[in-house]
Length: 198
Length: 291
Image (cartoon, rainbow over all chains, first blue to last red; front, top):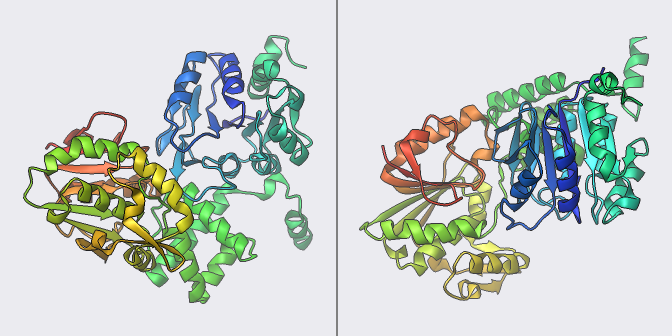
């Protein structure tokens, strides 16, 4: 059985609604950390974290430097910083924008794959650019797993399309079924017990 | 047989087992130890994921493939060390980064500073100086610059020279102007610079009371007592151990009721000094030393 250390989620255009749905659908006993990177203005405040908190019983954290990674907690990358996954915690940097973005989805995904190879799940949601595709590829190359929102159902299909091209073996799934898919990937034994295993 | 295995591992689509994070950490620790022993630069307590990212950027730029390969280059080829030193020690910043910080500083810290006959500011880890000029502008607009002295320090001589030059990229001025306005700036931002030498040359008056000097937060001690210490988005590059060492240095260098300003996403949470400061209202990480 593959254990999961972290789920990393990337979203851009249209991400707010998609993230609220995905995070809102995760069960309250979802016991791995979820790190979210959403592109937004460099001046954005903690509105995103507050909105997500309204959607879920999981704890949502607006990340500060060296934030400890805890199970069942959703971590939101702050505006204008890159967020790196390190062993047991998250660290922030103000390194230059990566292809016009800070936070960059690729930066977070690459660091997750290097820190937790084979136990990272990467998720790409709606967006209007190709950030995340390279990071998702790296996650799978390191032995982790990839989930991509079905481009046909994404508010903007560019990002999921790019991710799918880079990672053809990714699980493609529409948003309403995505949380359930993640639960199955993270807790195959629970899904089995409930008879829900495909 | 062994050769065959090695070859299959290094062939393009690397198998998951080919990457070993524990082994990579050993390589990185050896490299940093080598740099420290041979050149004296101490990056051993820098934040791991971030230093790993910067090392790999250099490895890729040089067409190398492993940390050990970089170590070979760095130890036998001093120009490579110079490049890596820039990679590892430069922190990127901008003028009036986090405008909200400057607004709060203006509204809640300046009134206290006004009561002082002389204001000593330490800008620790000032990099290329963008935030030094921002603070100088703010103090100037509040009428406090004449009785202020700003000590702007960084580990890196190269960036200090840049900071001293007062020349910044012209293409950033639009962003800085927006920041300046959002920060509560009182004039036209363009009053402070002229387009020159292919860049924006800032008024030399702004650095009249600034002392740029080399200082290493990892190894050097306190050099004075300050009313304000600014160290924003520098500690994020350090690990927890080094962070608390630097916080000790700051505590020892601050006058009673002195101000410590950290980056918006840095904090004294979980640090031994949490109890020694009170946080100034709002989301900004501005602390006043109270014991």
